[in-house]
Length: 114
Image (cartoon, rainbow, N blue to C red; front, side, top):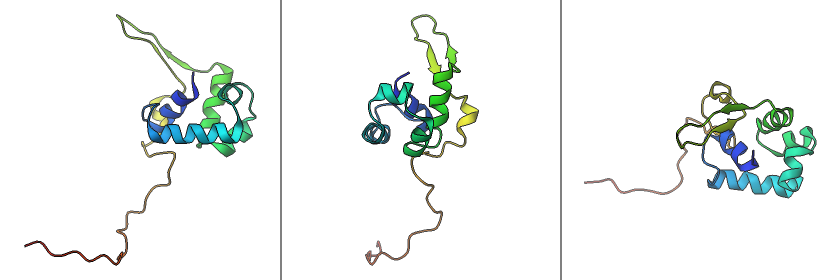
């Protein structure tokens, strides 16, 4: 399973999104080549460098604990590492949740609409 697909499963977005590409590039810069990350990089290093669920995903991949869904009638099968219920509420794992409070005065004044 390619690393961008693992990241996209965790993020709940496509593998070609800017967020996934940014994290992918950062992982390559910090840990080395993709194949090294997937097969041999220490899990502690992966946990430190990547999103919270990435170390668990890599551990499952290395152990062969994947979820296989067969394809049918021209549809490709899929391989996943997490059950959808394991991925939580759908909040982005790449960014901290934003505060519910409105931002304070930014100094920009707007004219009232008439």
